[in-house]
Amino acid sequence: MRIGIYARVSTKKQDEMNQLDQLRQFIAAQDGWTLEIEFIDKVSGSGKKERKQFDAMMLAASQKKFDLLLFWSLDRLSREGIVKTIGYLETLKGWNVGYRSYSQPFLDSGNAMVNGIVLSVLAAVAQQERITISERTLAGLQRARKEGRILGRRPVIVDVARARQMQKQGLGLRPIAAKLGCSVNTLRAAL
Picture 1 (tube, rainbow, N blue to C red):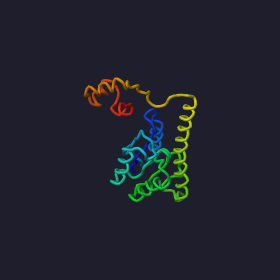
Picture 2 (picture 1 turned 120 degrees about the horizontal axis):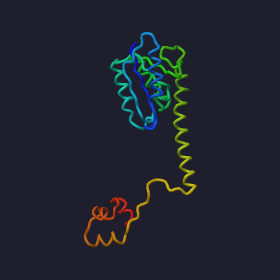
Picture 3 (picture 1 turned 90 degrees about the vertical axis):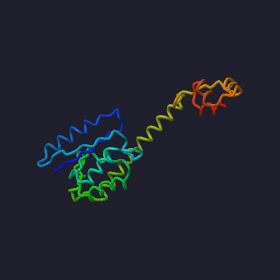
Picture 4 (picture 1 turned 180 degrees about the vertical axis):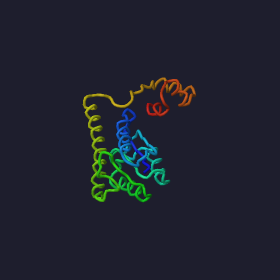
C-alpha cells in the first residue's frame, strides 16, 4: 500500500521531525506499506492561512498518488472545525484514499467504529484548542497593556511645523514624508 504523510507544525520555530520520525518508523513496521510522498506545512491549521502542502496533498490524493494518508493526530491535519475537518476526511474516502492517525489509532478509515460522532468530537476538540490558544494570546496582550507596555511598532514623531513649511514651498506629501523619514499615511495623520 502506498502511503502519503501529512505533517504540520504551527510556526517556523517548531520542528516537524518529531512527527516525521514516528510516522516513518510506523510505516516501516507495517507489512506491505511503502512511503510514497510527504507533505509538510509550517503554518497554523486554523484555515485562516494558506496551507500549500495541504492543498498539494489533497490534489495528490485526488490523482490517486497514494492509497492512505497518515498523519500524527487530527489536530495536525486540521483545526478548522467539525464541518471542514469531516469534509476533508469524507473527500479522501470519496477518492478511495484511506486515512489514519498515528497517535489516535481508532481514527482509521478502515475502523468501522469511526463514525460521525467520534470525528465530530475530535474535530471540535481541535477547534477548541485553537480558540484557547487565541484567548491566551489576547489575555497576554491585555496584561502587557495593564503593565504599561507599549505594543506594536514604536511611534513616529513628525515635525509638523517643518512639514507645513515644506508644503508652503510647494513640496508634495511624498517628498516631505521622505525628508522627514515617515510614511505618507503617517504624515497625513499628523497634518
